[in-house]
Length: 264
Image 1 (cartoon, helix red, strand yellow):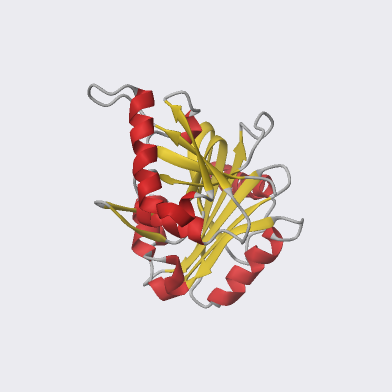
Image 2 (tube, rainbow, N blue to C red):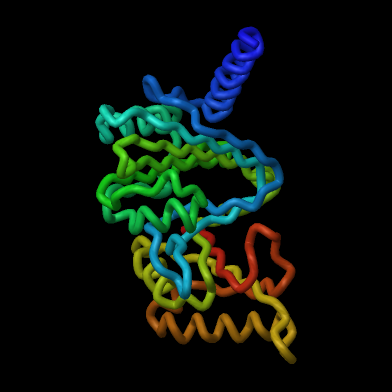
């Protein structure tokens, strides 16, 4: 029985070690691996903004949807650890090799912690006070995305969630999607277009599906007209809409708009 327990402890230790190696990030001192998971060919959403209410649920205002290999790990750190120290420890490693920041927030600027925990990550263990959270999203030159979420639970423990997504489309795509959202969510689309740098235009790829007597193409045309009307004359000139109907990749979703920068 003793040998079995020793082998089990070694298995848990090396499982955590190998997974940390995959992510390329050393855990914070005394961090305990709670769980880890690895899946291939998964459709994953990468958050690019705060989370907020959308219809009857919650979701980030902007995301990138990728089909690829998804690695996750969850760590628990004792209550004596300073939250800022934990975040700095992980952030420094994620930025050590020229990664670019896609999104970063802290405290209430991230939105609802409860929504991140339960609606986005699907893990109640991440739930804590809104003012105690950090979120960082980075991408390297090989189009590998990493997401870090840190929060302190009500019991005092610090929870650290690490995600890494290696896109299956990274090698065969000619453009980089910078934002995705529901094509009928006009307020979010307006905010995204309004915040574009001066002189920067975008292409908006719109996906759709057959709706009643309307074909997928006709439904897409209708969605584009709604989006154009919602943007208004001045903002509309910054977007070139392309109707993909139901011919887009799975990663583009349905009834969504995917924005791509137009090269200056």
